[in-house]
Image (tube, rainbow, N blue to C red; front, side, top):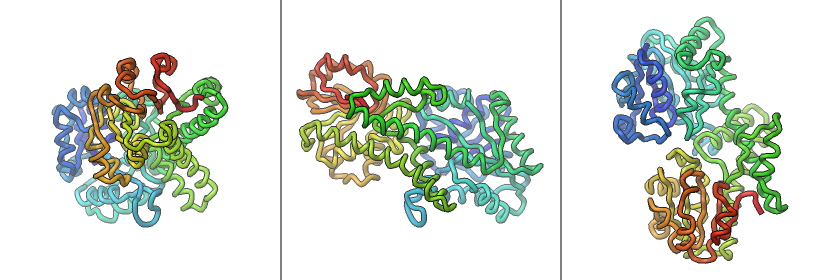
Length: 457
């Protein structure tokens, strides 16, 4: 059997690497038109940072795992084709700002139709709206002369930072297909691959539409929990309650559970906001405005939390940060990844720069080029970045003569920094804003820091 994956990003690369590592008899080819990305996958400096990924890739690359820009040849050779291309939120036309942009999905389908001959199983791996499989099948069957297709939905439920552990020991594998003899056979073919290392009881099979919708709903529920605890964090700050104690108290209720109850400056990443926005658009499209409004509040609360944090910094620093240096620790949207998509740090740094602060960023995996690109996308003028934005590999340098310090990513190594030394380098009073409730606040106050944290008086 031969597999190929169209798209060598945060989902396609790690997923195919794990399949290749677990199934050495299956040839796995990852194809992408981005030449620099493929070059990176074929090097020792991978384009995606995930703990354990480099070891998995090196164990299989060149044996049965291959990375190529020749997408058409990969399609022709493959029995199963995974589609893992980008599905960003539309920035134009109908549904702009909410609906998923499916142009890359359609382009992939047309390429498959042109190159495929004989039976092919096409697997939706990208996060897509419900009923996308119907459009895929229409394009494939209308444009192929010799191909016979079954389309499956196999959404990913990976958490960046733990993606390789999630792939090796997943909570579940979800596969949806047409409820026909041919569709059910295709589902079993894909299930048999995952069953090489995943117990069969964890491989769930459904119809196509349930599988497609489940991905959006899973992310919406997780985002909802974060927005819920963040809303309570504001109340805790006003009343003297401690949001961590509240979260621990409610998390011990077996009906609620403790996960995703960590208050913070806000959620980020490629999926949560995009999928909730897509869900609200779908609800409106299908005539359910009340449901759309309910889920839209999850996004509004997340946006408010980021803005609230930025305002707190300005207000604490005597209502002005103009000309003041602010050190920012962390720019990735979460620890153990170099992904900055929708990171709360982008919005906080944007707000500080627009208040004419000097911002110095330290992050162990994110580059200055990526930071500038993210801020430019939000409309920060390049001359503002040239004048007031810096990046350093040294946390001490970031804090040198800083008026304030903001922790925006929960990197474990931040806990072990020389905090007395950092305190000595800063202007006094030395304000520390912990947007992840990561640090030992009592210890920091003992050093002399003026600490403000999420959901704590």
